Length: 87
Image (cartoon, rainbow, N blue to C red):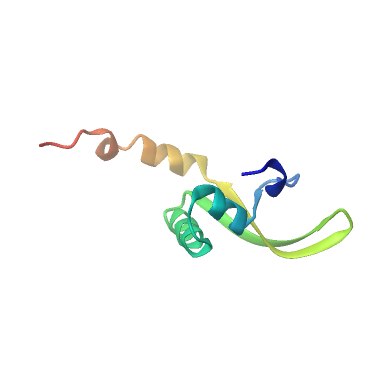
């Protein structure tokens, strides 16, 4: 992933370029959208569409995401996840 392909806007959430992230992860944009929807359904991220101005240009329906740290901690410290599978 080239540095200039992902831009983080000043603010409270990360701006997401679906195509760039999909390429970086080696998946299709549909797979990326599906995965992001699952993260949102699990409460691990929030997703919002915003309009923004960058360098004098207006961009509409830009996807912004924000992790939900407390939810990530909850699933990371779950006893079910930390137990080893039995053979």
